[in-house]
Image (cartoon, rainbow, N blue to C red):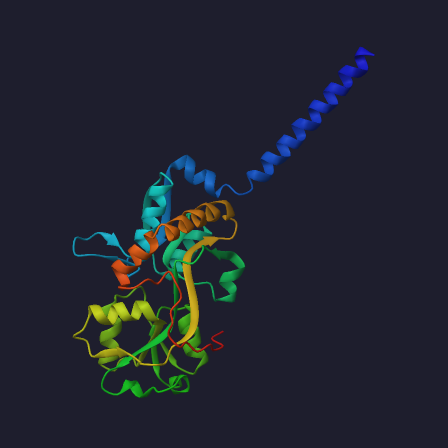
Length: 280
């Protein structure tokens, strides 16, 4: 009888051990959060050239809307933060290779190929698309149909450039160029239009008032949301960041940071009339 009890105990112990090991194996399938907590460092991909999301100020400090929010997230999680700078393709590649934990650079998730491999945090900015054109003649653009044959400036492989090409525009691509270069090229006719996020364009044009360009009034389309970009397998880290962002939204921190850079709260939806178009 004692033998049988002993056997039952051994079997029961083995079962519990296997279940525990199975649970441990399942949990270790997503080490995104534990890896960060062990290192005590959050490694974030960004550009350092995208005003006002990620750029260098007069003191040569990396700042910006996305950058400052990422810094606050790290602070609330009791982590140090390290930024690595790349162009858009480089940021995505760094996530793919596991070199960074997430990307903070005004990322949306509209491209179908990006949706397959990446996920987005809870939104930190609600926006829409607009066009920067020459002040003198609106670059000859009065509707989206007028994009045909126009020279559109931007980084390769972005959703904005893909839309420009779909509308028949001629792409003129740049590799991590600064805003003054983009705007100057529109002004002098090297390019005709920049298709991009409205708030980024508003701040860029406002910061460089001597360059004769403007946002085309009344032509706003494609409502969008942006946040931090994660690899899809990094669910645990994304969920932790999401809960922190929700806290920041509730206590007014997101609105405060937004007003610093945009002069208004972009963490809530705009009341402008925004056209919905098929930009895919």
